Image (cartoon, rainbow, N blue to C red):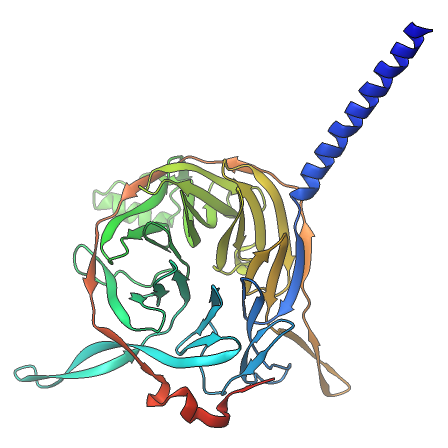
Length: 432
């Protein structure tokens, strides 16, 4: 009898332990999932509240801009304000920007200002040039904060200010030969320094605006591709003594970055074009680097889509030891070792996203389909659908190559919008 009772106890213990392992495994899987909430608007920021920048739009015209805190205040702005590019909340201080910049606290506008760079053009003759100074208004595409200062990406300049937009320094990035470097990608990240991207390039500045390093990402793997030129041109080249090879060696992958996150390490995301196939395949891409620019791993997600269906926008958000990465219409979740946890395909318009408590908030601007019915125009708003897909990630060999760049200090200042103060704007702004 005792032996039978002991046997029953052992069976029960094994069953309970198995059930616990099953439930633990199930909970672990469920905890890796995220829910999505779609919010109408252009840009979104989540920080002890949900803040949305948008326009009072319908399907026939674009209305006035607004900034609102969901379930709280709603601030309607003057239609002449240009602030469609970014909204960020830093410890209760909200900044919205485009060509104009607003600071909001407790649902009220503190100030409206512009960043202006001093430029010089020359009039007169070549023999007698006359310098003429003018102010070039900068458009802001991203803002970050280190808790004390603000850092602005204006694509062709990086500007550091205090929280009231008093400029500390502004720089341009140039090639070593003093040629303009070109526009940066929109995203900026700040930790021990300032991180930016452009194409396949990653740039790190110090918080004093000095260049620490710049590098480009290159595919280690090469492919051979047939040199396709008309036979007539090939024969002409051979008659002139020039030998055109039948094949050329090319990098298998080309990288285009649009998002960056910097913490203890640096994560950069974008798209990788795989040239192995006859028609180039485009994959979401993510790489991890050290703060010194050493590449630790690089991966592509094994989904592809036509070139005409992506836009180079994105963001990387840290969630514990995971990284939520948005590139074009793809959202994928990696851990710090490069293992893919989730992949979501977003069907419909998306212009921004942010995260809070396991919910990914997606900002979706108003986009409409148009058709004719009985001679009348009809409109239908395009909705957003989120589809979770099962897919994998593949490690690829990426090398880094040092890039020779330099920075140039430029004069920049801030001034009140249209040389007025918020109090003088009167009825241009109201809160509901």
